[in-house]
Length: 202
Image 1 (spheres, helix red, strand yellow):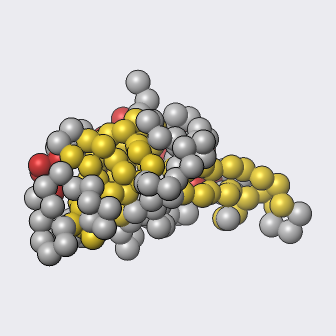
Image 2 (spheres, rainbow, N blue to C red; image 1 turned 90 degrees about the vertical axis):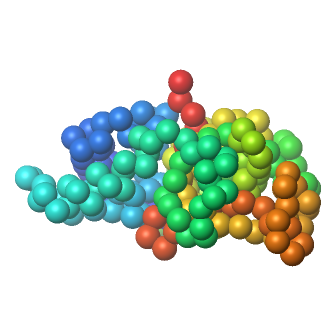
């Protein structure tokens, strides 16, 4: 649970995205979906930007948002990355892990009014598999955010922005296991930029 952004924060973030990286807004089903990442490294700089924006700050924000406008990485190129490389963009279909209730969403966000905290964001996400052309990637939910009011369910097409990693392939899901015991390619949050998921908007 986290506090909903302060009044004016979302319009300000939208304004900066429109100015510095307008194509990035196309990744979100609605600009209010920015609420869950307003206080993260993806958008935190927009809270402090004065008009006019400094060239240095604009360069930092453009670099962070460039990945949101990039085409998805091919599976073969993703698996060639080293752990920690990124952020990169993957796109594929979601699949629940064995044991996950198919009736339950893989990820959801909800806005609620709390007597003590005021308006709050509630977000619940689970690890899942991302099926991409060529193989499967394990999505580590810890620290991540779904920028959508629509719950994420198995079978949905989603864009995932995060950092390369590997996890032990205990469920033997890898199409070509490598290393002792087998490893599965994974994507996760980074130290400054959390994992970000958006429904594919067509």
